[in-house]
Every structure is written in structure tokens, then in C-alpha cells.
Length: 70
Image 1 (tube, one colour):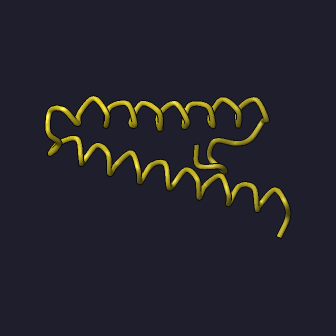
Image 2: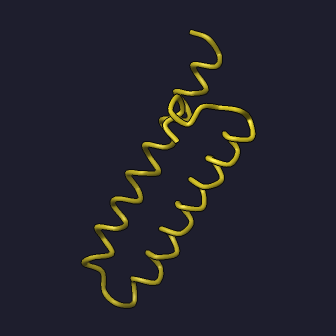
């Protein structure tokens, strides 16, 4: 397996985890107590920021959005 392929597999695995966590947090937010919503919103924002950083870094590195799943 080429090194590039391993890196793309790694990135895709991280992205899957980030998206799963975002989905779980959004579902949890729907049933959260009012005092928990701000905490959940903060976590959602952090995950979205991480996705944004990965997209910008991939673009700067010339990686294909389609190939990486970004």
C-alpha cells in the first residue's frame, strides 16, 4: 500500500469519527436539559472547527476533496 493511500485512509477514518460525534451531539442536544445545551453547542462548534481546519489544510496541500472525503 502506498504511503499516500495510508494517509488518505487515516484522514477518512478521522472524518468518519468526527461526523459520527457531530451526529451524536446533535441528537443529544435535542433531548438535553437546558443547562447542558451550551456545553453541547461548544463541543459541536469545536468539531466543526476541526473539520474546517482539515479542509483548509487539505486544500493547501493540494489534496482532492473527493479523494479524502472532505
